[in-house]
Length: 379
Image 1: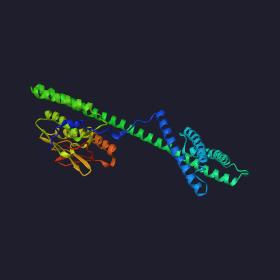
Image 2: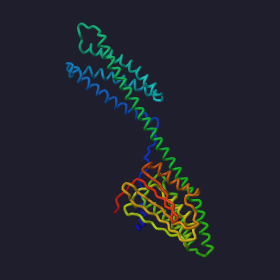
Image 3: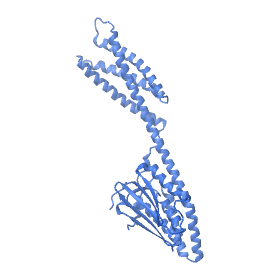
Image 4: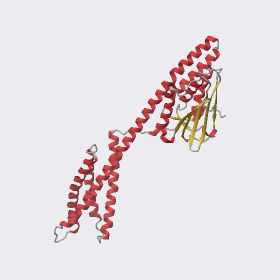
């Protein structure tokens, strides 16, 4: 059997469950969107400039001589892009269909201005002695620039949508953390009252019997256990060694109550001691073993906590002997604690975890499995 006396591993804890970041406020969110938009616009127009230079170069236009004109034209196009962006930002709460229609209308207007400016740049750069308006060429420019501005509008709408999705994910993660905190608080309220009352009653009984040393030892253990549970952060994982140490304290208190008919063993693989587990995940299982295994029995009952690594999973089992006349461990009184464990595992790990119970005439076994996560190397 592996002991769990190295309590210093309790300091080894994993970051908060889910790692949820707080949802960005209005000003930081706008700043983040603006910064992302500026970077995207710079990349977008750099690609337009390079592609224009290559295509017009293939068509026979000197890319070096036309660079200044393209630079001025693309700067004007970038300014139009920012105008479209500002207008679409004001419509971010509207449906995707409204955004699409408005983006197309803005793209047409921007394309018209861009095409006229493109024509002006051409006349400024070439200064032809005779010039006739070519409506076909102007139409081609309108079509290509409309597609270009509409493409940018769609890219910006997708960017806004990605921010909304991330904000929604942050909100959900924050809600899950709050729900987990409330669930853990409810678990504490479920654990402490009847355990506290039973322990105090047992201590009073020991004092009346004259066993003051045992009563004092029980009260000191109770004080230590309650302080540790109240100081736990419900959103922090702990090493299995730390969780077992807390359960060992709990079982020592219960053994003082049932000195003549309770014993327990903890059998854990050495490598499993530093695996990370959710706080108090074993508490309802151990309580269940005491309440439905030891309390109703007239004979000695053994409680066993077993843990081992199974590939990429950590498995932990809590067993207790059953004797004739003992209560059914899955009756309504204990389903709350067992369901709490199953719900916590499902909410945290989904299908990567599992919770099973086995009932035989000789024993009751509750077993959990969860993904193997190790905090550090075993020395």
